Image (tube, rainbow over all chains, first blue to last red):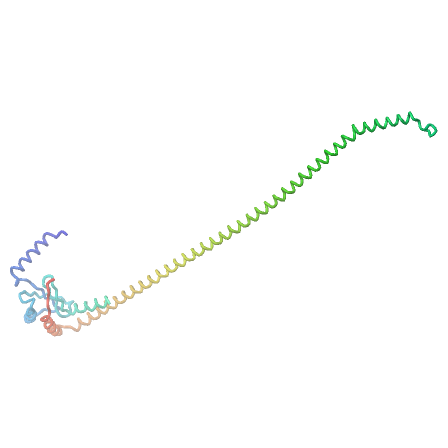
Length: 93
Length: 168
């Protein structure tokens, strides 16, 4: 499989940066309403987010809760995610 | 003799004449006629023999004809029976094939109906779920305001502390 050269370079750069400065990585916290600093601090208390820089983005379709995107990892704690889980289980049963 | 009115010379002459007549008759008439009769009798016997032979031959031919006819009838009956048996077997085969075909078609139709029913069931379920999702989303959007969201976040934070994230 041939990997796009620009994508490969970007990935390499990102990985090098992550290895050199693990604290510089940006983690996107998506919520239905804007989060306060206190709320962001509470989120940062999680073990896997201690060295990350949190960036709050808004997505009203989440209804409630949060979606944390850390690189390729996604932690979905939103009402929309919960509903999707229920819908998937209903459709698969 | 003369007193009796018999002339001895005439008598002798008549005797000679008779003898000559008898000789000529025997020589030139009796023998050929007898030969002719014998010949006719022989021919008659030959004809009778030939006729008897012909009758015998005719009888033989008739018998032969009857035998051939009987044999032909027997063979015809045998052929008819064989043809009937073949036709019966063919009919059975065709019936069996038709029954198998009907069974296959029935099974296929049942499977198609079952598949269609399952597909319809899935479609209906999907539509019900999607509709429910739209209704629930709409209701929740109306219900969850910023204040409610804060309450949800408190629960999320608790959950987040307990969340373990692993690298893929």
